[in-house]
Length: 325
Image (cartoon, rainbow, N blue to C red; front, top):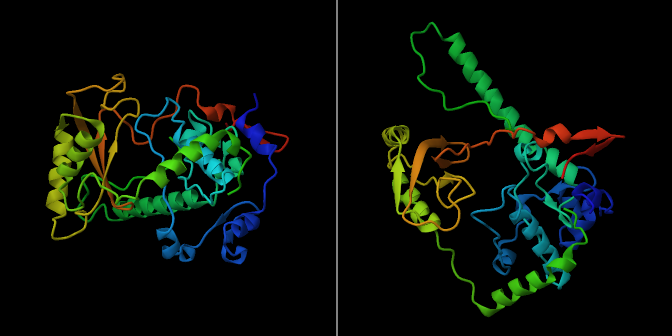
């Protein structure tokens, strides 16, 4: 069986300008990054056309151990939709270097359901991750310098929330045939029912505790939510620092950092358990992305590298990257 990277390299890529033309986008208006990648300016979004289109969300709560599933299905479904005559485009998150060098070795799909050029997309793409990392860590350096330069001024900080970061801890392939049945099923389902408005799990005006509870009970099926002393102090600190009148964090959404192996916060409890409580260990304020992260159980926000990370098998042979999956 061919590896993902073998399949990718055997595929002849179309210039990104040709891809843009096929989608009805003027190639002169895209921002190219080499021959096969580009950014599409946000000004090109036509809201009227958006209203006439359908959005298909592919999601999951408990993926496989390696995390595979959503990306491959999303790409395969898009290929299948195009195969049966629909004009479909897949929108994916940018791969993180953590999974690429950690357990998975790549996050651009797999087999004949990939986005290409997979090496560039997995490692650098358009350079945005590197730019954010540099900007963030520059602010961290300036903060450290300020504290050092003013260390004799008679004040100090108890805790620094702004820490240094590192992201480690569109051409189509011929894969549409295998997803034709899936694509047709999706199209038939859409045609049979009228589009419904999106129903959110909680209201924007809900307090943080209510947002967390509604996600835990409504999505995971928990019967209760418990908070550690640290989490309680963080909630009290947030309420004391940012009042609802400030409007600073009142609208922030909540992201639950939880194991993907179970609906509970215990990675060993499989299936559909009932009567369980989710314990929130810590609360993190992310002002940059404007969200609150509630950490459940022993979950790490950036998982550590495994005993034998994929980075040990990524190398360069005759000028070509080997080891990406």
